[in-house]
Length: 344
Image (cartoon, rainbow, N blue to C red; front, side):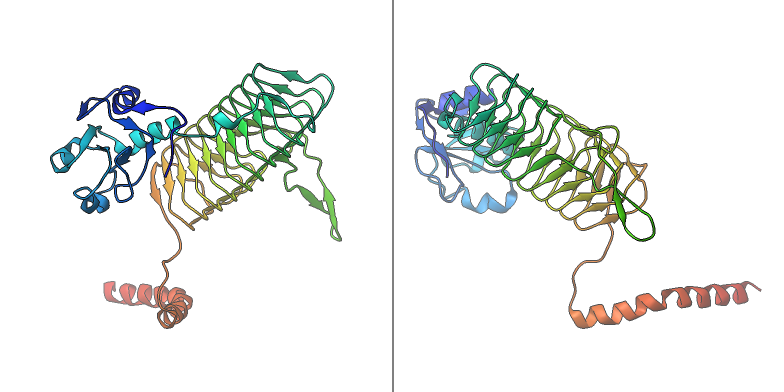
């Protein structure tokens, strides 16, 4: 449940979404809620048929829904072709976070030499801003965050508490970096001499485009020579690992626990499900969707949906199938011999 920090009416909400109202436009609205939990001063939304059963009994002031369900709505309605997108846009009106930002530098923060601060910047308690950093207008640096030397952060970007940007990282405009993420740590580069490992200095950087979100405790490693590059409007979930010199195209989305090995290039408008692994030095073309827990070991050159692995099943069935799997090569050879004998 969410609450507005200022007074809004149903008419205000309709104007924000540029849609018409069927109902009382002067109804005060204080927040958003689900169909089942909404109160008479809240807006609910219907974006999934599974919740159609809750529409008839909702107590919401109004419901955001597709026109095909308008006749089933017992309260005021806001008809829109994509209700979930409408809900996303409305949620910004009720987000209390920006109202809590205190403009200025907290007394406990440490700011290095030659730092450039834009207007209305908020640097919270115990943050560290190293030398040569540039912060754009309305940037928010959360408590305990560390911004490495010579990094650049674009306007209206928000770093939550305890974010680490290593040196020379570039972040675009309107980014969101969640707590615990590390941008620009060393890539995993070592050379073996037969007895032990020798570290390869990681000399590149990391560049994040505009409107990028990085989830909590995710890591984006700096490049070994060139930069690791994340395109505009890329959304990265929590606990994702992106290795050195990876390139991710605009508007792609990576769900939790994705791991991408070094120098792999992911195209635009790609979607990687939870736990997907991409091997190194691959190319994934635009418009690829990989379903959860899949392992990709070869480049993908045609857009579409790709999967690997098997779904869960009872253990006894899995054990039998595992035995059969080990026999597949022998079975295939026997089948080929039988086919050849039949042809002859």
